[in-house]
Amino acid sequence: MSAWYSISGTVRVRRCPDVCAIAAKIQEHCDRDFTVSLVPRDAEVDEFSIEGAGEFVAGGVLVLDELLESLGPYTLEAAVLTGEYENEPCELVVAPTAEASVTALSHYRLNQIKPMLQELTAQDRQSLVILMREPDS
Image 1 (cartoon, rainbow, N blue to C red):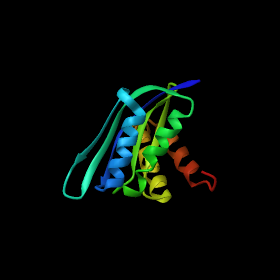
Image 2 (cartoon, rainbow, N blue to C red; image 1 turned 90 degrees about the horizontal axis):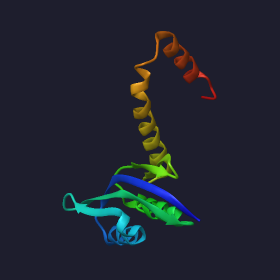
Image 3 (cartoon, helix red, strand yellow; image 1 turned 90 degrees about the vertical axis):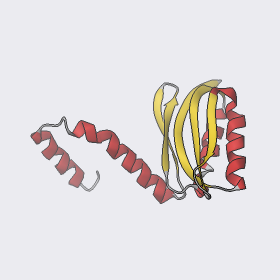
């Protein structure tokens, strides 16, 4: 069994041998279907980026996600990578902490819905305010 997966995004990371090793493992795992790079930005910071799509054997997507998440302890700020898994949109957060991950995904979601909020009528905006004030929302 195999799975189609695409992912793209960038992550600012501290420069260190561990990051270079992780980037090399990601490149090796993705083979030729992905562009993986680690570009120096200043004396202590690199920018890791990935972009591509390909078919992975069973478990291969999980391995790639785990490798990408392993950059988390080296990130300067959380980043949301976007893509598709079996034709469904997906996101992967690479962050130094669980709290930073939750915050980054929340900001990402807010930015997704902001344009749609402009299309709401005044009555629907009021309904949304009420919904957001409910304890379970």
